[in-house]
Image (tube, rainbow, N blue to C red):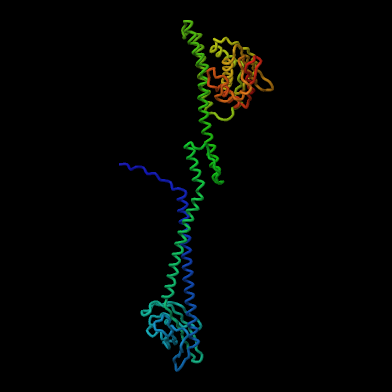
Length: 459
């Protein structure tokens, strides 16, 4: 039995940053808390040692030996006089025997005192702590002194209960955890708010992309931080490229349909003419014409498919194509399409005129221009092809109604038609404009010597 495949769901950027900063915050506050706790403990310990040292100094200052024992009058520290007060004083001889103890230490035994087993150091204070049965844990300070009048060594010992300092440390730790916990919560909230503010441009970009997908916008419009400007710019370029590609495909489909009209019309004319003459389409002449137009249709389809996937300017490294034979071939095909109109064509074709580019581009360009001339001319068409100043000039004019001066720029646009009475889609001139533009050429509309429209192309 196979288990269903599991897919790892990627963690969002905001979650990643929250986790990363959260771990960093915990480490920072935790280490800071440990440092502060240790510093406070050390400061409390130093304060206890200082306090015990002061008590020893006070005890030494009032102690008076008398008959082998010490007499200590009432001390300023009242806790020495209160039994089990938490502050205890002792005076010991060199053998560790108690010569004097404070009233507060009457119930305290020194049997467990480890400092009794250590050698006495004159003028040196020894600090430590010990566990007692009666009073729990105590901190102590032992000071060794040589008493000159008696020529003996003594130890002055002061002990203090650790409970007050332990309670003080616990209170500090409680306050520390409380404040650090509140600080951690506050910083976490601020961190989330700052991250949301910092990630807002990404959310806005995602929203804009969704709007573009929904068709509500054409491109990324908002201004973004420098880190996202390249992304938004590339997105706009990608969107523009995709839309240009779609537009190019639509245009190519329209151009393909338009380009196939003439060969289809020729084939239709051959079939109709053969039917009128009572002949057979399989006759050699008809078959030749049919093969010629089918080959032309195949060339048109190949050309348009290649054009659909091509972008940018056309190159100039193609094999030079003689213009005169191509134009004559197109005129012959169109004459069959428009044979009923009896249109005469005057041709001034320079035999050495060549076109530096794709032959299919030349055929498409001249085919569209000549088709318009046959369609809109009354009875005459004048075609002129020549070279001048290393430029190829193609001029086609007819004796039709012409194109009004105000419409000459407009008719060059896709879908624009100056005469809606004739059949057509209004894309012939637009195709010509696209081809001429791809070769950095010029196309213009004017009035010819025959009184109709004149189309001039310079490549």
